[in-house]
Length: 159
Image 1 (tube, one colour):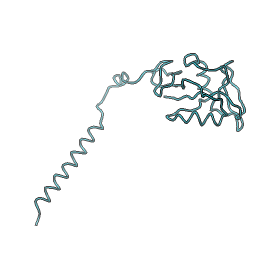
Image 2: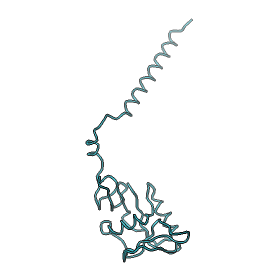
Image 3: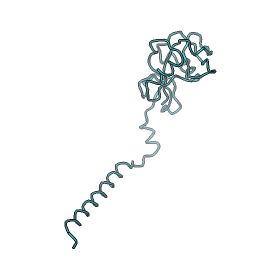
Image 4: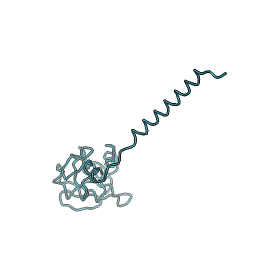
């Protein structure tokens, strides 16, 4: 014989599960927003602004939504290349030792970011197993140095 109480429990349970899934699905669907309205809600950055992770913005694309930010200060100590790679990456969230190109752009906008020594800075771009590219912040030259040399370091991040 069919127990009406058991059937009622099953029906209520099934109804609750269906309702729960409907509510969950509704909360994950965003209403359609025209592109022109979405663009108004995106963060727009300019040179010298604080970036999304608190660095100084030193490059932005034409939209102002994407670019590069640099830490506000150098590492306290000069570091070998391998230590520089490790320390820059330790900030997390995409922070890294800048590539040769990112470092050149940082040099060109050094006054926007500020706080640079007139020293040589490591880039992440390797020349070979023993050397990597550097950017001179005193003279603007790029050159290669032995990876065991101790140079200045400034971490960067793209957004």
